[in-house]
Length: 185
Image 1 (spheres, rainbow, N blue to C red):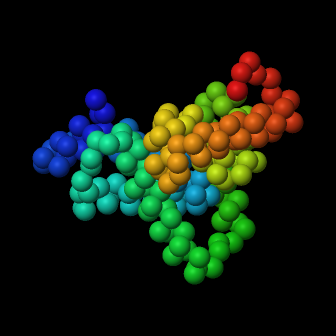
Image 2 (spheres, one colour):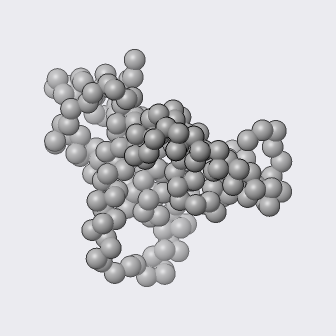
Image 3 (cartoon, one colour):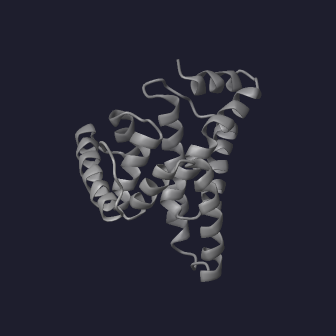
């Protein structure tokens, strides 16, 4: 049983504590996932709020074909892609803002990735192609299956399997460059 799905059902039935549980359980992971699209932790937080707002106001129907988390991350991904499309028309921020945001992002990531090895892996992930970062984030950090990842990324399961293989190979190369020792990646 998916706790997110049961919380969402309770929310739809009028119990507001259901949406509170959803926000509490999925907020941090969704922020980091959406940050991979927008490269701005504050915008990722806003997009996460927009995602939850969409759940509260529009109350889209959830069909248990996929897990609740997969469904929620798909909605979040669509919100981020809509933002990116609109943002292309707006000028970029100043360098000072990026330096400030980078410091804030590091603080959040250190809270989320407390162990030193996870931090090294994260830094190596940043050097990978965006598609590789996304597939590793979804499959390993968020725990999605290949089928769920395929749904979120709008790819076939076989394409995701190949992406995971190539991403792991690329990550291994980056980690070896940094002198990272590991048992098995």
